[in-house]
Each structure stands twice: as structure tokens, then as C-alpha cells.
Amino acid sequence: MGCLLKPIIGIIKWILMIIGLITLIVAIVIGVAVWQLTKTPALEGEMHPVSYTAADAVAFDAAVEDLEDWLADPLIPVGTSTTLRLTEKMVTAKVVEAIEDAGIQLDLSDIWVNLTVNEEGDQVIQLLGKFDLGFITLTAGLELEMYVENGEPKITLSEVALGSGFGIPDQIKDVIADAIPTDEALIDMIKVLSIDITGIQIGNGQLIFTGKKTLGI
Image (cartoon, rainbow, N blue to C red; front, side, top):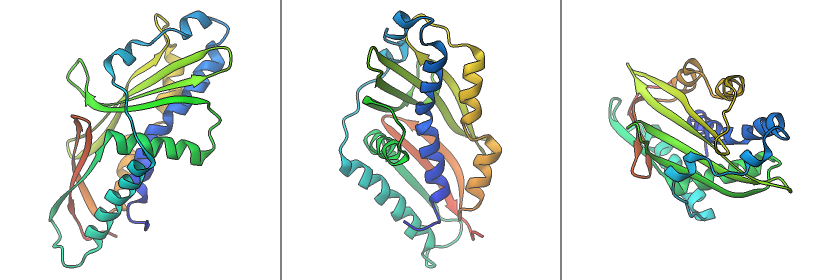
């Protein structure tokens, strides 16, 4: 894969790998309310399992490479619209691959990524992971909104889920939120691409980026 789309892949992988930060929460709250941590978070009830194979990660790369080739084609006029369409299977497979490649020391029994509309009607990326800590199995997750507003991409952390009936301290939510690329960083990443992102649509098991080809840098 060339360098043209590395920033956008970095955005996707960065956001989805944030689930690894749940271990920070565990380190802080473990021993305080272990029994609550083992319960199922409400977020899991809103989600569905995602089955994937290594081929889905390959399909993720192929979709990105196809877009890269399209943007690099001099016969495609500037201003032409295009899309990058990713499925739950593709994104989940890529998340697992990215976590493995990063060497994150987590005993993961399950990872789900749902691309859906939540109960409030927001387009969201929901992430859920099950971690075997030896003496307990922890189920934890995150919910993120990723969208375009007034011509600029936005990322919002809307929920941190850990156990049932356990309130996550605001300080811990702030730590996780701070790890997500700021809107400014997201804009800077996209600026190096020869594409203007005009929309981000999430729902029905798909994450769709729409944009127009530019001259690039």
C-alpha cells in the first residue's frame, strides 16, 4: 500500500484500537468492584456478534488500495466524487489484525465492531471486547460518533461501557477521550490526501466515506 491513504487508515486504526485503553480502567478499578466488572454492560445488549476471517482484512486493504489507485489516476478529473465503503466484517478483522501487529498484551476472546445507529438516533461506531484476566472475564466497550459538520470531520466519544451498574469516573473517560485524535488532528491528516471528505455515513453495518478528488499536495 502506498503512502497516499496512510493517514486515513491511521485514523481508522487509531480509533478502533482505543479499546485497548480499557486495560487502564481495569488497572484503576480492579479490586474496588470486581463483582460489578464481571457483569455484562448495557452496550452489549445493543450490539450483535461479528464473524470475520483473515480474508476480510485483505478486503479492507483492497478497498483502500482501489481508492488510492483511483485518486492517483490522472484521467480522473479533479472534483469527481467517490466513496470508500467498509463493512463491519472488514473493520473488525482489521482491528484484530492491528491489535496483533501492535503487540498489545490482551487475552482477547472476542472483538465486535458494529457500524450502526444507536437508540438516540446517532450514527456510531460501537466497539466491544472480552478480555480474559485469568480470574475474571471482563467485557468492555466504547461508542464513538464520527461525522462531518460544517465541512469538517468530527469525532466524539459518547459512551464508555465497563461492567454493569458501575459508573466510570469522568477522569477516566477524559483519559480515553484525550487519546482520540482531536478534530484538528483529523483535519490535518485528511489535508495530506488528494481528497476532500464531504460525508461520513455509518449504519446498516457499513462505514462510508464520501469525498471529491482534489489536486493534492
